[in-house]
Image 1: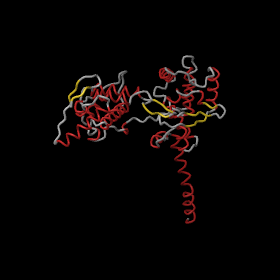
Image 2: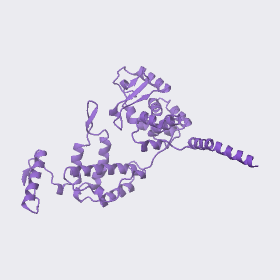
Image 3: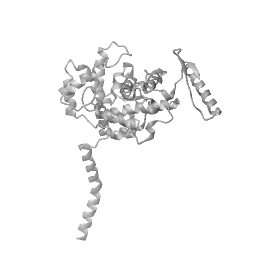
Image 4: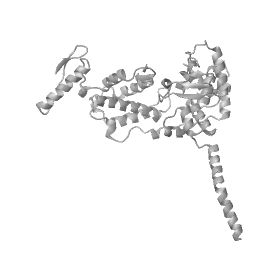
Length: 359
């Protein structure tokens, strides 16, 4: 078949078939594909990974588009995904997608784990898993479009193991919290003090906090209504406001312009740098901002709230993920021992009474 591509360049496409009937069927399929692509057609047998990456990025890795509060296209994490794609391009780039094997992907994983991060330090399995997840999605996309017969991920043992990822269980103690907030009294870091308190008292994710606007805060009902368009799970939820968080909100509102569409915490472009400095000055090197959410969730459980209620507040959808927050620390371990002591107490008394009776 001879055709002209989108740039007007003449192309010849050949396919071999076992008989005339099969050849006619294939020709019709190619013509339909040509029509669907508006004059362009993909020669799957020659398609390189870079060409697949271009097609996938143009279709999938774009800014999210919303209609009536519902996302109809794009990804909120599109910038992060483009970063993962850059690493995949560097390795697979000119390789034809139909030649990528399960062994090739294993080699990619091993190669990435050996290379240090761009800013130094060892590369964790979590980041490599995210890159592999994108690669798997791209190859599935190619298969749905008829460019691949089978995804090489399916031709061997699983290449993405979340069990190998490091699960953080860091909880901020009251003393550590006091030290962290104390260093945020300084003018250079005062702007992150309210958002740290909000994270500790609501369990909201950093992405939800920096997108929080004044019309999300109900001062009369003392509630925060988290919009679904800002959440990771695409589900809205309602969170109560603690007394100290209310005080922070009151101060921030007084300094604001009074525009309900304004960001509550302002533009937080340098929060990562400021938080890194704050934790260093507080002597808390092993602390991530996400650990504040972990701390809030754990505190709600310790305060006696039912786990399912806490899940509604924090926005956890999967029970397996949520259970990571229910840590067995010293206090929990002691409570368990005390509970067992209470359980055994009647039986011990019965045994002692029986012994006295026999004696």
